[in-house]
Length: 339
Image (cartoon, rainbow, N blue to C red; front, side, top):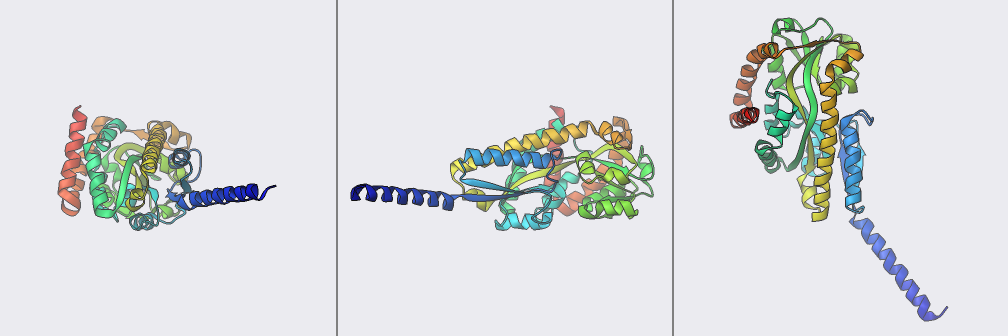
């Protein structure tokens, strides 16, 4: 082989190595965490897998998505701080977990607000949802890119069927550590006990709490039906998951990468919503199949709960969280209901 050819091949090899090294150096890692098990019946994880596939393909590998299900990177309050600081690039966090960093999200604890999923989507995907997301980004440095379902919340307990607010009296109901949910349960005559999510199954098994309130997805995820005999489908709160991205990370992406992430969130959100909604609308069958006695309420019966709970919680939210945003949410809900 001639000296010229050897020199040419060596130069080509060096150039190829340089390009490969440059690509590796340019690759961005997106750490994505959520709090459901890595199982095929869990909406957050199925959605996360779809996000990963789309983003890595759409960016030709310039973004590598690393998934951390089941809270592997820490509890929600720690993840929210990570998003603010940029040490976590992306997370899907439940509404209760967001309030430590962005207090305004407490307004979604306003009970009996939405008629159904379509009503909620109209508010969240509309002007109100966009304005709230932008307010959060400005105040926290966390970009809210999509709202998805955490399940319509219902009451369950181990003692008796709940058909009227009177049936709540004397029951110790576990709620997430949030004054809004404490106020909700107390307004209906129950005794609210704030217990972290990870401690809930043990609390129900040991009788520390008689009951709890959650969507079907979470009842299944933590096998809460093992210690709960009765379920009442009152639908008191449409609970949320938010798709959150560090604004610092997002602003450091190229236009192509930003587009890929935005599209990936939309794909994930649709899967997440569809799966959770299917579990919600099948709540009676799903919970009955798990051995629970399920009580369905008529609109008139739900209204008895609403008349007690909504004014009490609204008063608290206006005084302690934000009258402006509470009023905006009520206005947006009323307008969407009228369409």
